[in-house]
Each structure stands twice: as C-alpha cells, then as structure tokens.
Length: 570
Image (cartoon, helix red, strand yellow):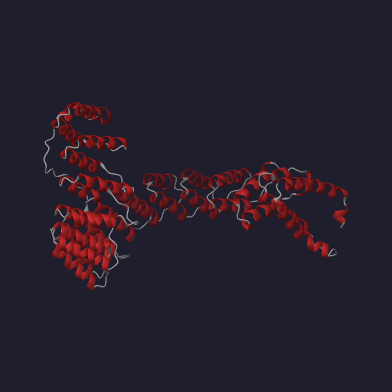
C-alpha cells in the first residue's frame, strides 16, 4: 500500500491509465483483454494485502503492455510515449514483453516492432540473449528483412551471434535465396574470429547446388577455401562441389577438384567416386568411368557399391554396347554386390533400345527371380522394346498387366504406345488412350503425346477430329507446339481449307510460337497452288519481318504430298 499512497506514483499511473482508456474508447474490443490482464495482476494482492510480492507489479505491467501490443498494435505506441511508461519501463520488463510477444504469443514481427521502438525511442540497450532470440524467431517465420535489421542493431550495440546462432542464420538466409547476406554473415564471423563449423559452409554449398547455382558454389569454394582459407574443407565439401559440377556436365572441372583433394588431406570416398563416374558416363566418357571403377576396387578403405556399377552399366547401355554392359553386370555379381531395381531397369531399357527384346525379357525374368517387383519404368522400357520391334499387341498386353498390378502408366508410357499405334494406323486405339489421359490428374500432358494422333487424323483427312484433339490438349493446359501447328496447317491445306490454315498460322504467331521454314514454306506453297498469291505474299512478308527469315529461302516452294510424313517427337 506504500506505493499506492505515493502521490507521485498515483499521478503518473492515472496519466498512463488515461491513455489506456483513450485507446479503449477508440477500440472497444481491447477493453476485455486489458481488464483481464489488470484483474489477473491484482486479484491476489486485493485478497491478500499483507503478502509480499516484490515483482508482482512488474508482472502486471508486462501483461498490460503485451495486451496493448496484441490488441491494438497501431495505437499502442502512442501510450508508450507517456511519462508513466517511460519511467516504469526497464530492461527486464522490456525483455519480458518481447519474450511474451515472441514466444508466448508466437508473434515475432510484433516483438520486433516493440524492440525497435524501445531501442530507438527509449534508448534501451539489449543483451545478446534477446538479439539471438529475435533472430531465431524472425528467420523461422521467414521475416529475413527484419532479421537483417536486428543483426545490424546487434552489431552497433557491440554484440555478435555465437557460433551456433550464426550458423543457423547463414543456413536460413541461404534457404531463403539471400546468398549475399549469408556470405556477409560469414565475413563478419571471420573478421570477429567467430569459429564456424565446416557443416555450415557445406550446407551453404549444398543449398547452392540444389538450387542450380553450381557456378556460384564453385566461386564460393574457391574464394573461401582456396584463397581466404576460411575453413579447412572435408571430403563432404569436395563431394558437394564435384557432384554439382558433374550435374551441369563440367566433368573436367570436377576432375580437377577430385585430384586436388589430397592437397587438403582429404581422401575420396565411395560418394566421390560415384559422382565422378556418373558424371563421366553421362557425357559419354564411359571408358574413363570404367577406369575409375577399377581404381576404386583397388582401394582398401572402401569398395564400389551398386550405384558405382549401375552408372557404368547405364553408360554402356546408352552407347549401345550391351555386351560390355552385361560384362560389368556379371563383374558386379561376382564381387558380391547385389543389383538394384535401377540396375535391372537400365539393362532392360538398353536391350529394348537395341531391338533385343528377348534379352530384355531375360533380364526381366532374372529380376523377378531375385525378388524385385517391376515398377512403371520397368514396364515402360519393355513396352518400348516391344514397340520398336513391331510387337504392338504384346505392348498392349503389357499395358493391361500394368493395370492389373495397379501401376498407373506415366507420360512416357502413354507417348510410346500412342506413337506406336499411330504408326500402325490404329488411330481408334490411340484415340482411346488419349481419352484415358483426360481423367489422369497426376499426369502433366505434353504435346508429343497428342501430335502423333493429330498427325494421323490429318493424314486421314479428318481435320475436324484433329481440331477436337487440340481443344482437349488446351483444356488440359497443354499448349500446342511448333510441330502441332505445322501438322494442322498442312492438314487444313490438304483439305482445301486455306482460310482456317491461315488462322492457325496467325494463332501460332499470337501465342509466341515461332514457325520454322518448313511451316512457312508449306503454307506459302499451298496458297500459291490454290491460286491465292496475295495471301502467300502476306505470309511471306510477315515471316520475313517478324521472324527474321530470309525472303529467298521463303520463296522456295516445298512440294506437297498427300502422304507427307511429319516427324513425331517422343
């Protein structure tokens, strides 16, 4: 009661409370909240006036301020300019308010507003603990711009996050794509001799590679490791950079890093070899990959695994050298390495593309005998093998087996079978598959699925059905490509529907699909043969002006045949 009897305290309190009442009158919804905070803070004191609670008024004050911030964030700052607030706010109370807003109410943005106000207007200086807490929460909520301001305030106040917080900040800013700020944080750490674990650097490199910023990752590695020697890289560091370079096809640069690992006392592991071997095989340097496979077998610290062998097998399959691919498979088995489903799929695909469907089936049977269940890639590869050898009915039976196994075909399964059916002039069956595609929400259709059927309809003179298929394409958000438009233009010209062919050409230009010389020359040739030179000249002029095609090349007519074979992409 001594505090209440103080005239000075009562005068300041009522000034503060008048400000609160003003806000309450303007915003009635906050009245209940403030009342609850007030009653909660004073109920126990009223019931037990003789009990001593030294921090009870502080607790009440924190609750009232937090409630005002939450219920009326735009006007609460007006109250905080009052003499009562300025005289009674302390570092501990402000800390508790920030923590209440940030943690108890999960509102780090509002906590930052209060923090910024008390720091700039009331000149409160905070400890590193409140800075660390705000930085952590703001980054977790994705408020990186505010976190950047907090970090700047922190530096001005002479604080710097510790190693764990700084590592978290670097990773968080990198995940948000703010790599410049992440690098600045590392520079601050280096300048202030804050030790950063290699994991932080590796995580930053991995994020860059994952977001296809491989060259940026390489530059960062060369700057911070090779030039500044900010940290000592480990094998994981080199693996990240090597894997990124191989992903973009720069295998030679990856090999340079591979051979430089010893300079930093780093030894390559199986992941290093797998990245390099896979990169070499992807660019066709399979023999060099095979040499590294032999090299990895001679090491004492590890042995090549199934991924190592599968990369080499895949490389030889892509080169069509199935004999060597089979030998590498046998070598893998003899080494005690068990193949994976990917290994079998690679071999089946290789034999299928080399028109050796019997060997593909042998691998399939071997796969089943070893307890592997086929997936959609397995069946698609077998289907492709059947279609290449003209066994369309076998392909259809495989399609039915997929359905029995509840293995939904993917976009390539549809494309392969549809294209094969169209080549066999079985348009109705191909059309049925397109109808099935309409109900597949999990497949993003591509023009190369529809083009063979559109081409078949146009060659059969059924351009109306071709137009219906194009409408179905567009209904599935699949825009026609250059080949689709070329097929349609020639199809309508062959039916004598020149006006529609011109409209299709204009639509092609309108959506930004640039025709090539085949498209333009075909349309011009048909228009000239139809006795419409004016339209032909206009098309020629449009192509010359908008597409930068030479007039001389456009003037050469392309002979029109009723059996024109438009190539179909798969």
